[in-house]
Length: 171
Image (cartoon, rainbow, N blue to C red):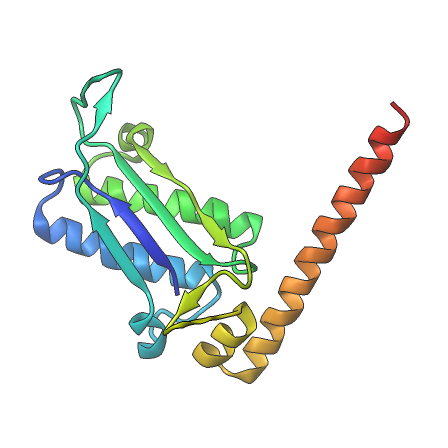
């Protein structure tokens, strides 16, 4: 259930190509979160905010379209592999929308996968935590798995911090 800020300059893509790209990106990001893109409930909470920027490079109007995507999900949804997939898949979708090779388009596409700290994702007037969101979307078992995944990631981060402190304490 990504929330995506998509920055696509006006006129950069044909309207039909842009619509296909947005749908493709939405479905792929849902899949990379480990959820079912075929779920109507998940589709209903997956939102793209399309921004129409004017882009400048070195102070001058960009000669070719430049794109920026900021997909946001609750903390615990992305693994390192999923984050890399998000960047690759969004870039590939833009290349297909432009009808150009990946390597020609990639230098003009920026992707910033963002995880919103648990307890800071708000919707419907209240804070929504990852386990509750996932339970709503995919069932109680999936919600429990999300709770465990988030706890494991936090333990791993704490252990990495402790290792770094121990490693630098002798300096």
